[in-house]
Amino acid sequence: MQLMKGDKIEVFRKSTDEAWEDYMDDFVGAHGYVTDPDTVINDPDALIGVSLQGRGTHRLPQDCLKLVR
Image (cartoon, rainbow, N blue to C red; front, top):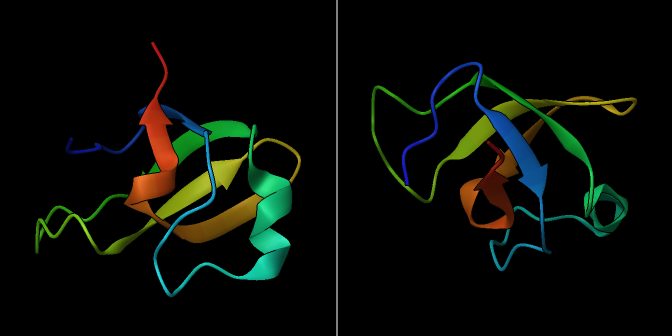
């Protein structure tokens, strides 16, 4: 899945990526949108920028995100 800037997302699970930090567990269930997708490298393992409602902007692994329509 390639996420694009402006896509609405949900953090639906904890990531298995080594970049996942314990404080990110609180993000599970949060909704937001993509602010800085990985469009240059197109690497599914790359972190992408997301703005989460009420939680600010963060760089998260893509395996914890799902597209919300």
